[in-house]
Image (cartoon, rainbow, N blue to C red):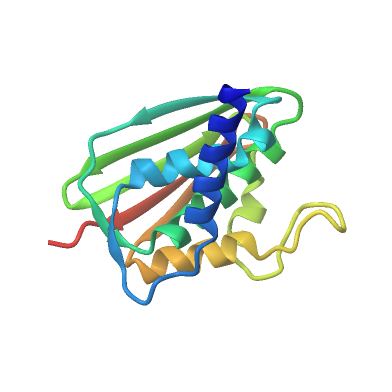
Amino acid sequence: SNEGVERIKGIVKNLKLFARKDEDEAKESDINECLESTLKIIWNELKYKTTVIKDYGELPLLKCYPQKVSQVFMNFLVNAAEEIEETGEIKIKSLLKGHDIFVSISDTGCGIPDENLKKLVEAFYTTKEAGKGTGLGLSIAQEIIQQHHGEINVESEVGMGTTFTIQMPVAE
């Protein structure tokens, strides 16, 4: 019972952090903590079909809107799990290179055909069956990362999987 209560407390804490209205100003945030919090919130979406492998680098605090950045992570992680047919892996890696933080989320899913890669961030574009997706997740993610003066890159190979890499500059 005590263990269950502690788990519930953790879930509620993470949901409160995630669901809170965005503040007017950016704040110093730990990107690795944002990743962990997001994973806890969506764990039920992932745990039955994926093995999550984490490789977090040592990162400085990033001045950002953490709820929005977590929304981007959630989108990529849920999409990754949905692209895995039966079971597979999701790898999350964070690192600092120069003055930029990089976060990559890779899956061993079905991959994205080249002709669809260019359309991914178009609003309302989706490859999901009717009723399964709005086609807004990646365009919203793109907007959020651009607000942070960053960019999103995607690499994919059909039958092998996809990697989304987010690059955000660390303010000096």
